[in-house]
Image 1 (tube, rainbow, N blue to C red):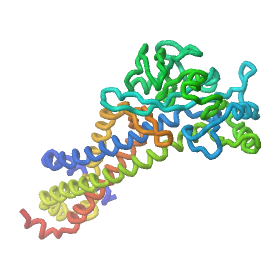
Image 2: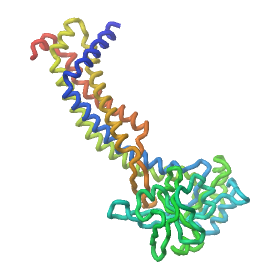
Image 3: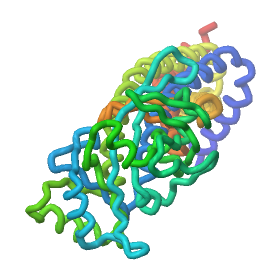
Image 4: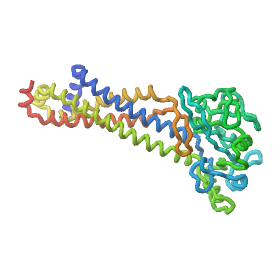
Length: 395
């Protein structure tokens, strides 16, 4: 109890004297704040991209590709394949039809808004079943494209990120012209980065004949997946790869997540090292300036352990304040900021918003605390070990 009482008294004393050391304390706080803001800002890119890639995935939705294909870009399904898929067990039905959406997937060039460059944007051909399989797709402006006409609807993310996608705009892809008639949202999923049109119109425009890239299937229940998968993978009439939609998009986001995490570790590791040295300098300066005070306290009976803990606590306090400022600044600056980046699986752009999540804020606080702990440990050792007689003679 005596030790705890001494620690509490010294911590209170250190906090009360912080205004006298405001300059060095502020330098440590803002140095750590900068490191944390960069860390949270970089990782919010990964969080936002992953959220877009996985938010549309449903446990009762399956994706069927050609056997051996790892993305829609490398997959081809014939009309006969689609018929076999539609006859497999475990598929949901509506209005006496199985909920199977065969889809075409092509890449088109669109200008980036506000930039002199273009981007690869997914252009998806769908049939009426697509809107039953993906009930989250809702028109929010304009109207639905007319079946059999060169009309498109544009996802909210694509409309925000790419030029030429306003209502009434005319797009030219190859020898064909397409009119933008509507804008849709899809619960923030990757579909919002796409353009949609009638598959029966898109197929002849790109000489696809009676073929598709993928089939999206609404299952009777999440538990029907294995039955559906086993039936198709053992059917000699087709060679297909079956996976849950959520797993497919999660795998596509993994490469970018790993790349961004690696960059964050490198950049913030170097910045964190600089912040540690800043914290060390701040705490060494504080200990040196208060050496007589510390010696006097020890002469009055305060133990070295109490001094050590109080100095480390002060460093942690400064670090956590810096971490709070940094995380808050990153949230205000980055959260919701819209951008677009490459989906390396399909070599197309995905529009997304930076996402500063509570999990990132927690990691920011932990990272700041580690900086403060390392930055305060060695000065605390020095304060606790300096002999009273030596400290009293220091100026």
